[in-house]
Length: 278
Image (cartoon, rainbow, N blue to C red; front, top):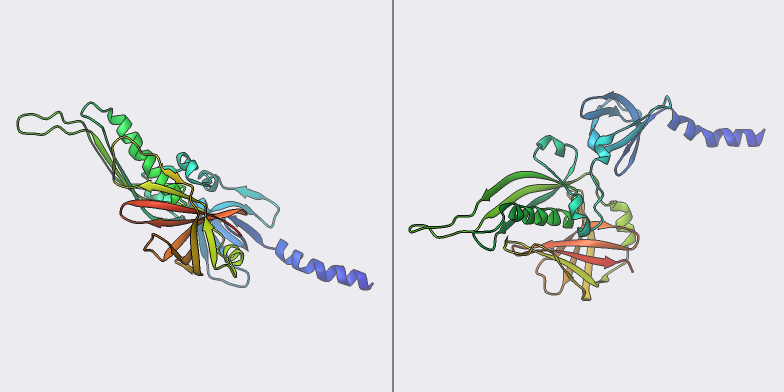
């Protein structure tokens, strides 16, 4: 009889959980009561509350309803996972502002490219500029860019009153992601760590590219002295000192079981520091 009541007590939390719907987002699992699924969002309330909350569909992978039915959301899986700059070609480009609803804003990105001569292929110039834009987005941890501005000038052959000018393209956008690094897990991993070493840095130069838009990989041990880890605007930062860099705050772009990546940028370049966990 005693064992029966023990099993009953253990089952009560599971029974309560089963009486709720469960929303699976890209970062967490939410026990709640789903009120409505609209064209672009899901309305729900937390247990014991009456205030209605909303999540956009592109942040939800599925809903497990208390009835046993499961609803999958393709909006969430339409964006690719970006694990490093090598995945830059997986970054999605959109001109529809509505595609950014519910996503995490990671800052502005821009790129430009120019042909080597007035006989340059305009499409190749545009391709290089787009490649650089996606690279910068990947370095920021983004998997989507909302294109806010684009301009392409064709080759100008010049004349008596006008100098010749090669084709050039300029892109400007805003970087977004549907996932963010787990704050609690990262802070736990970094607890007590005051010094790390980055054996590899990824550098992408800004400005007008003429013939090359590839990033550079530098294999050099760079010591990083960490003062503290903190959260600002929902993102993870390290307050640290890195020799050769004036910045003292570096955003954590991503991390896995083996390493994490830090972001630094100035007017000339964007840098990722790849740092193994000790």
